[in-house]
Length: 299
Image 1 (cartoon, one colour):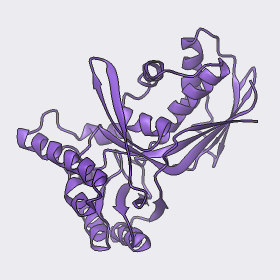
Image 2 (image 1 turned 135 degrees about the vertical axis):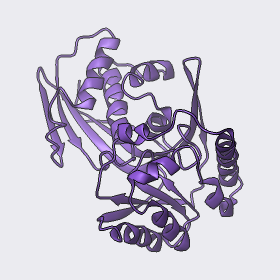
Image 3 (image 1 turned 90 degrees about the vertical axis):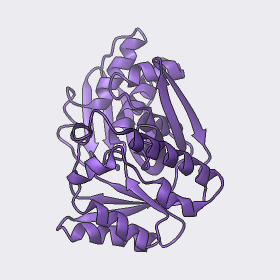
């Protein structure tokens, strides 16, 4: 196998009411540079000692599983991971490793994965198509699983909208963020979300951006998860007051994403200020939507 470079974008899942349904690819990337080797060598930039342990490295686990799935023994690999996506912040960092591991394994075997093959492997590590699909296919994707089969559709995303993402200086694992969710929810809350996720998609298609403020509200996960994120309500309030069209938790958090047409720096600074009020350092990034998804480059 020649030297491979696989570039996988960040994702922001849920976008408010689309809990475990909607996912959006963003132009922030993790890169995986892979060379053939009889041993496992891992370098991370910046350095993450835990990721350099082959027993804990998600990319290596997925690559090994993919090779075995295709009927081949995994002998090793020399891997350089360039990590630009903050870890455990709700921007799909784990999805990038899963997607890259599958694509690398199939490329090494001179194949491309079908949807069914991709999901069969990916779901062993993360059963969330709302994160995996945008990382793989790009754009805004809505997905569901019915009788074990994944169905999805890519929705045109307006080019004039950008994402302002605030990144607070603390991690929040998906496991912890899911642990605070209730087993059962009131019917009125389910109806609330169905109404708003439908409105969200319609508002994007019809460019009725004034509706996004309401359409990105949620009652299934954010009311429970916000207890894990200091000043959450103020972050939302300050972003909207600064001109954001709609604001929500990014994935399971701790990042928060605002969609906007203008006033990007004002919105980002306002969200940072809200975290600063609770003595939490934060930064923001202005990101565009990544329509292409993952890329494989060969040297």
